[in-house]
Image 1 (cartoon, rainbow, N blue to C red):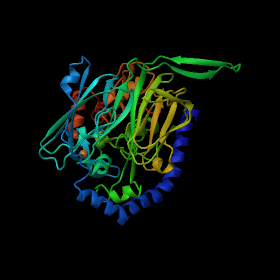
Image 2 (image 1 turned 30 degrees about the vertical axis):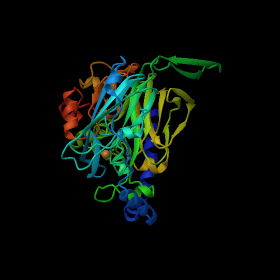
Image 3 (image 1 turned 120 degrees about the vertical axis):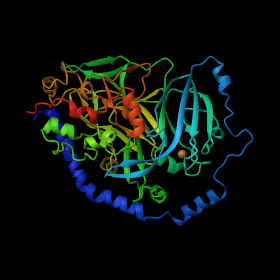
Image 4 (image 1 turned 90 degrees about the vertical axis):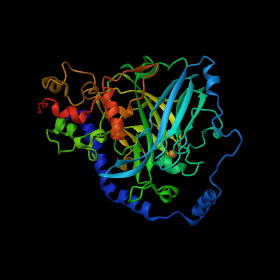
Length: 469
Ligand SMILES: [Cu+2]
């Protein structure tokens, strides 16, 4: 067993240990989350807010007074960002569904990407048959909260702002006059804006040492292969409804990355490739295994070795994220447009906080991204980057006619999951291919197929079998 494969099995072994706990801890979390009611004090407070009609900010100019026309006339680039608020049922781990609230039928909502100085023109439309109003607070803006008051069913509202600061910024539903903001966010109404710096991203410097012990600084061009990773929690009762009591107690029932637990772990195809058997899991937790899971079947994140990789990471949740990549060092951590750290093992994100991680995957292998809070790992806060060709699949994929030549990452054969791929920016390297993966409604998934992304659940059965050895 070579070193890289052994690393994968080490990760699997750690996860097995976790699963031993998982059986008890996770279930207890679920049961206690469902059985603990909000304390009387919390209930009184919530009732008082409701009786007041919510925290409505009543002022004469209270709606959308940011002048989109005047901002457009400044000659700045205007980027339209059109959102809908939609309540839909979406799957959760274990074959159940939950009552999700979404922007545009997907969790997280669409990623908006602009350049520092652009005008964002945000339009939120709520269909007449939607069960509740929704709002949108965009943290990339610097406008009064009066502007993003809620939009009622059957109505549309718009505001504009200049994205003055570069960085990653959350956006989220602000509830109905702020009532239910927690419910709407934890049910799925969140996303990010990436504001690229006006002068682009910086080169990445990584320190290496030579055999004689001398420092050898490696510089990588600013252009990078990019991913988005958005952490959050679910607080659900047995019926798949939001459980406010569990939220007040910080008893989450799931940790999600880009909306799903264990989004980026192996699936049955990887079992076939590495063990020759669809039913022999190579990772202990493969909840989204079968092709019948379609856009929900878990997928892996593929990168090349010695390639500049940039991660846009947001913590939408109520719990901290201790972001770590097992086997790697975060070569650079940036918040806003300021470098916070370099060559660091783990970086802490509080609630509604973000960072940009730049790194190089030095050797072929499997690298687990985690929230290094063990409860978060075992409830879904883990995914795998696969760098290079650690399993020696290239010759087999070529033999099977899936590839014509060996490739520097499996993304060339299988694509990277669409929910982890942000829109292109000024320093983006295009992904070789993108597959349809994410907490999307079927309508959203078919739009992505129409846009050229790969439905692996349709394509894989038509591929020639990969010779197993
Ligand atoms: Cu909402």
